[in-house]
Length: 106
Ligand SMILES: [Ca+2]
Ligand SMILES: [Ca+2]
Image 1 (cartoon, rainbow, N blue to C red):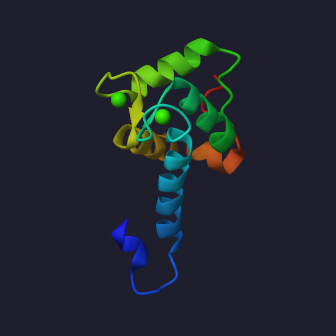
Image 2: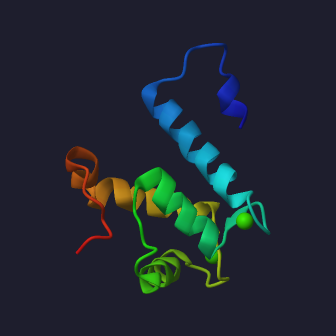
């Protein structure tokens, strides 16, 4: 991203967060198949390692999550769909960050 190089200034917390969001996506999306998209197993790994959401006990949960995220129904989560997900987790699951709860738990 070109805005990474903004005149040697240290990144703000928000810029760092945005960079992190990018890097996490690239990290997990690059593991299998299409490097610009998360497939189901990549999504599962990302949820578990980065958000501590363990959906492995209930496969339907990943299935459902993928369906919810996959706006264009191509069976994978692209960067835009991922960003929308990150934003919704950030806004809807505020207590997840403050109390360490996982949004997957009912
Ligand atoms: Ca992939
Ligand atoms: Ca998609």
